Length: 442
Figure (cartoon, rainbow, N blue to C red):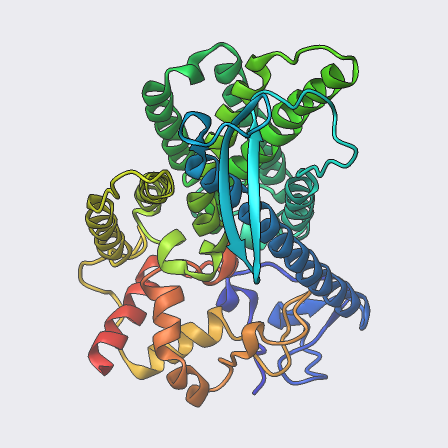
């Protein structure tokens, strides 16, 4: 099949640089509007970008597992400690509590000092590089995926007509500003009033989400709010928890009594991180689920996720502390999940529900998919930077379209995930035609 149509058919600018290549190699028709850069240049750039994304994502996930695992472990350990008053009198001075644990065929006796032992131990294990590596790999991944390919994943011109540079600049500075505002609030003492601070922080994140979904693409907005939460969490480790720990160690070495306030403020930030963990994990993996980020009420979905995560953590924290398990949490979680389900079914914001000006026919559906999707989803993609069809899905022939019609509905009719950044300018009516056809074909 040759896709030699005039540029108005594709409704997109010339792609690339120097010579034309239709869906069939050697088309040579300069009027089709499909141009790519010299053979090999774009290909190698795309291959390097893909491998960089894979390796960084792998590192990011492994580091996050290590960091979140240790964070959950130490929170559970703190909550499960038996106080010294309930234990035999053979514990060393300064011990706050003790816990016995069994794992891997061995028994462990763990004691926690408050604030520190009387003298510095010879060997001390620090827990910091798990957090640092998570952020460094995550930010590098953000640069590779969202900044270098901002036109696909960060910008949606149907929301706001930004250049890739403007979107990247907005993303970076909002990331920095959000952390600075959180840090200022904590250092002024607001964080010591736990409930008002939690409510204020929640409303702050919801307001940011609403703003991001009206500036960036849905996928970009979800990633941005996740990056802000992740940055706050890692900055807590880097700017306060570890520096305070170093001050405690320095005081021990100098033969001085460490300031108890250092441990208290570090624990405060550690608890913040604990309650933020579940929402950030959901938001980070949301790019795989377009019905979350590419639908009309995506910011409300984030608001529900931001509420459910801490509520679920509360259940486990209470359970680890040996208190009565708050089973009501799961009722709240079920209501929240059902609400997300219905919100995600509302579809994209621009789909028209009234009468369609174009009839819903097989030919029209195939025309829409061929004109908006097949330049990437083809055996030989003609979009610059695309070497193979994304996820191996081909949409360059009628039989391929009908085989994948439900997937098309999920990403292009009931959500606006595809085309990414609406780069080929699929209209609201075209999405409505796809949705109506899928309903008729059931």
